[in-house]
Image (cartoon, rainbow over all chains, first blue to last red; front, side):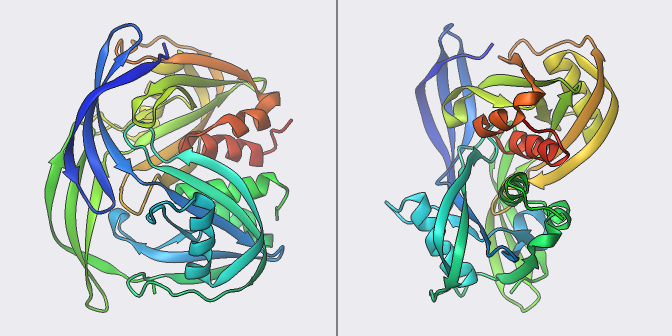
Length: 178
Length: 178
């Protein structure tokens, strides 16, 4: 059965640049102790940015999954201390696709893999787009890909990334379709 | 820009029960070397199981994210050597909700967090349900939650787990709605 629990201890087993691995113990309300290995990650944001005709996506190499050009939402990690997720989303939209947006709406916040990771990803809808300038990270290999919203179903069938599927399927739920 | 790359080396930095952490190096086609810290995970499956009126979900404690009863699809890890994802899905459906299904359809395969993890999750649609018996893992705290498909939009708004959002939003795309 599902159960409330409280943390009872833990130790860091790996400390990396973008996540750490902890071995932590918990006591459930029935007294049972559980040990979990957990990836602790600062979280991330993704942005569905469209103007009613086009949608702005990005392609980039993802070494972890062996993909040279994975199709994704403009996105980024919550790696600036004290910056709220919506502010990170605005910054990443400018840095990755060179756009600002007049209207912002929160779509979903979800755990990418709650069985072993605490990474939470916040997905926003950005409309009322205008050009914006922002310094881009020279180390990021990002290609902007502008697609037609009219082919949203075909784009969804092509996507292999969780935040991108969730953002585009949510857009589809709101009535954008072939 | 996006870029092809090849692996040039790596070492295991943490070896856990359900994942390992590797520090790996890659050489991009322009000659640049990149180092990545990568969580290597065996992958997982999730199942959207419904009979046209009801949908079968589960609730379980997820210590990693501090949730006592996260709402999810019946699901499981690809932790049996040589077992294909569809077979894992069939086994987990029996173990977690006590059902077999006549019709199976692949909905999506996606990376939960391709920036740092190779975990791939395969989501299936299962219909033509019948009762099945399977041994359940006594260490799993799982409550089955049967919901009405007519409230699919309300369920989607409640979900915080990537595979569950993707499965239910895909079902919504196929025409199930309030």
